[in-house]
Amino acid sequence: MAGQLRAYRRQIRSVQATKKITRAMELIAASRIIKAQANVRASTPYARALTRAVSAAASNASLDHPLITEKPQVRRAAVLLLSSDRGLAGAYSSNVLREGERLTAALRADGKDVAPYLVGRKAASFYRFRRRDITAEWAGFTDSPRYEHAKEIGERLVEDFGREAAEGGVDEIHVVYTHFVSMVTQEPRVIRLLPLEVVEGTGQDDGELQPLYEFEPSPEAVLDALLPQYVNSRVYNCLLQAAASELAARQRAMKSATDNADELIKNLTRLANNARQADITQEITEIVGGADALASSGSRG
Amino acid sequence: MPLQVELVAADRSVWSGEATLVRARTVDGEIGIMTGHQPVLAVLSDGEVSVTGPGGGTTVHVDGGFFSVDSDRVTIVAETVTEVAGRPAEAL
Image 1 (cartoon, rainbow over the protein chains, first blue to last red):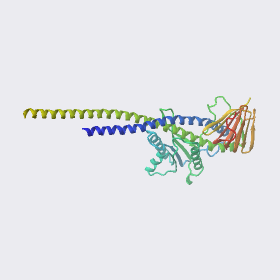
Image 2: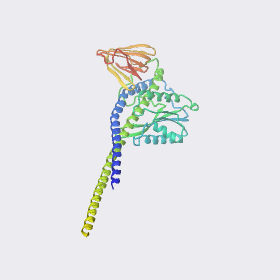
Image 3: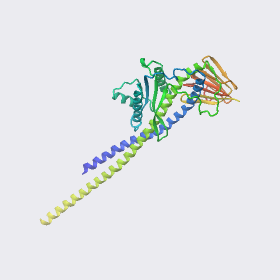
């Protein structure tokens, strides 16, 4: 029937339009991954210099700075979840959320209260849908985070870390983010942000001795100034890794969507051709049948 | 032997190269670094950092941060670094 053919053609056009969109998204994601990776690389010298300075200061100052010291009793733990703002990135956000749920359950089992800090609209809507309390949320920059965003998050975390648990403060801070291993592998990871674990020059600078720094004004003051910056830089690194992972996940999801659209178009075209052939065959049968009928009625009359 | 200077912001490396003199403003006051300075790790205050070198130098504004000197390697680290107008970072 002609109606069927028209329906197939409409479906093909709609799939083609979708394919154009997914293809464009794939290309955009692919080009932005390179930028995101460059950002990760560009932030490395800063992180390295900061780490070196922190470990130098920490080995000279008495190690009782509040950001390094473990609190004797942990009542409230913060979980910073880095998800994406938008969907169409495969299982990216749900992987992070699942890891977050696992961590939350583990913390609760240890008798700790959990305070969620959410980055990205996906995490916020996940929590809101389940009517859970959200301690803080940020959104709108997950695919291209800048240092100011990390600073804002880091400062809030350090501030809450400095307060007592009873006043809404937290005793430890964990981060769930997606580590960018390669273009094809990204894995959700959990790190403990605070209290900081300061690694004192092990292995990194092989055989290189820590120079005997003179601290200005004092080792304690230097450490005081460095640690919040160190936290910000860790948060920034997590944001950048997460952004690169998000784009990679989106690229992969959109590539398979495009491939799938190709497959659909191929199948639909076959069906449409079949339908067209059936139409033609039917028309011929009708004409032949009609002519036959005319001829036989003519010979009789 | 000249100083090896590296000037980095949180999201990029701003300037690196050789220099004969680095001046910066720490929380205690201004400090100048030349070859052979003893190792120092100092907290910077809001202000200008200027690097003078044989192949040109640079002057930038930093919002705090810190800098370290050890065996003629100077690393200046700040969260945000802005080039001061009129004296471009890549002069000469």
